[in-house]
Length: 343
Image 1 (cartoon, rainbow, N blue to C red):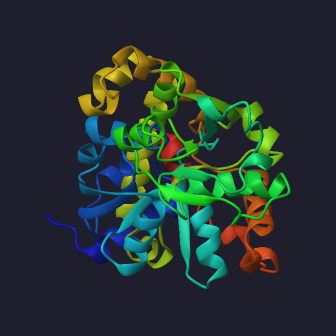
Image 2 (image 1 turned 180 degrees about the vertical axis):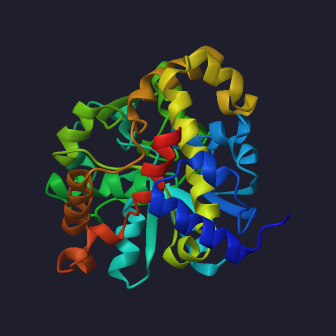
């Protein structure tokens, strides 16, 4: 017997009332079994939980057919969500705050990264002159895409160091090989980026790292606290109209997070597409090892972490300095809690 959307909504409401597990949700029909997901730089380890969910078949296990559209950076995937060309996005948590401030009800439903995983580094030949973010004035800073989390993190570091966010030129270099080439060919002076790009440049001796948010210590040094990174976010009305679909998506991502908790870096290297390795498997394995600490353990962003992110955005963006965003509206934690109970 085929469940109608109305039946599915009623079943989910019942499961919520009695606290049924994701196993019950699995038996329900998704309202939208075929959907499109946007991401900005899928090969980056920032988005590894997405690739794990895809390659391990966790979406298919939930009865979902997820088409993944990879954009040049997080800002572009956000634009795609707002424009309606994708249904959901794996992107930076900060975008939910920005959109709430603009009156657009976009919310995260699961945290994928608890630390940003972003490293800000200078080209080695400039390391004697550029020692901190205070020295970035007039330089070209390579980021995944202007407006993305890599760009905002570098701008935040500059503001903390006494500069204006406009004191440097921010240049989109994409992810993967194009970002590596931007440093090697001296197209940029500084890079704010993620693994495996950073580990590749470090191993080749092309950069000197100045700020490292792959770890809890490095994140606190820059932001003063934890800082939610990658999340799955969507329009709130999508979650309301498609609660079973949303739960199934979150279930798949939670399975990916749980797999990463015990996976060996070598297993990750075996799983991802070969082009993600940037032609150097041992290096990729090292990059994974460097990044494993950054993935969420619970799928839920802590309130202090959300506040830390909001405080940094207020400092950085004049449009947000006097805003009053209700952070409880930036993250729906009920889906992740349910997924964790059965993951």
